[in-house]
Amino acid sequence: RHLLERIQQQDERYNSFITVTADEALQQAAAADERLAAGDAPAMCGVPIAHKDIFCTSGVRTSCGSRMLDNFVPPYDAAVVESFERAGAVSLGKTNMDEFAMGSSNETSFYGPVKNPWDTNRVPGGSSGGSAAAVAAQLCPGATATDTGGSIRQPAALTNTTGIKPTYGRVSRWGMIAFASSLDQGGPIARSAEDAALMLSVMADSDPRDSTNLQRPSDDFTRDLDQSIQGLRIGVPREYLAEGLNSDTDERVQEALREYEKLGAELVEISLPHTQLAVPAYYVIAPAEASANLSRFDGVRYGHRCENPADLRDLYMRSRGEGFGEEVQRRILVGTYALSAGYYDAYYNKAQQVRRLIKQDFVKAFEQVDVIMGPTAPSPAFKLGEKRADPVSMYLEDIYTIAVNLAGLPAMSLPCGTVDGLPVGLQIIGNYLDEARMLNVAHQYQ
Ligand code: GLN
Image (cartoon, rainbow, N blue to C red; front, side, top):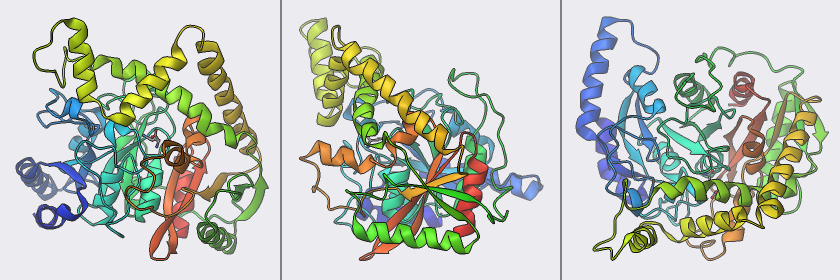
């Protein structure tokens, strides 16, 4: 009740929720009370959370931030939503996001931009900006999110929250609306590594309904939080602390690294030589997959349908033209072009080859080090509108996060101080399936 009231009083300022499910939340809370009274409740029982509006919720509109799905009420719950329900968590509602998770500022949402609680003239990051802002504004202690190229970590960095992008295949994508299926991964945004670990323990489960799921049973990611990190080898990629990084952000990250040295860790300079190729490769692969995934929104099966179509072609064209916003249309065009006959080898195949090189950079680095650290985003939160007209400068927001998705590795962002009152994020990249250690390393700093 306290949080529902808080949302009602404060969220006009942030616009972090698209839908608030007050009645359902109170029912779930009452059921959780009963379980708690019975004495065998799991850790998350009764904990209020929110779901990014990309996760299907049975009977509750799931818009994906798009006019296209403004009227879409799924008949089933996403695997992640089911898991939290089983764990007894209470869902307060659905959080705002960039349209179809395409963006780094939450300005492409059909429901209007989200404002950063640290400065409401600034963006909260994206695409999971609603989840990050809701946690930062203390409207809920944790929220689900998704990360295709940085959409959990970058908003976490810009709002002083902690966000995890798990190993690809850890968290079921079933019922999570697809953007780029080989990159998409769900994860939590919370206020600390410990809280995020609790949430990840609920989310990371095996699921035969997702063919790319690793089918690993859920784990207790809080178990190793208190381990010593004496002797830990931290790789610091020289390509990450280079040109393009805001100097104050650099300083905060350096301070965090020195703190780790004090905790007994050893810093090892490493190289990820193909870093510069990650953003260009991503902007071929992600739009290519998006163009295929978004072909299902045709005005026939579900979602927006234009008025009085003249014929089938007109139905497709106007329904899609009206339903999708500018950035989504740009991605569909880019992706369709990259996949078309004659360009497929030159662009799509080439990008896949580059992807392999990027992955190998990390495999080699992890022969030398236990985790990799650097900045999450090149600078603190920017002003609303500042990058809207320049897609390339927006795309560079993810310069330190995108390679991780291309490689399928786990990574997280945690707060490491402020610059002029705005939060800065430290990124920790772990080896495959090494989330427990990554969280241990984050918790020791916090
Ligand atoms: N900002 C990137 C994009 O716009 C990543 C988004 C995401 O991770 N979903 O595609």
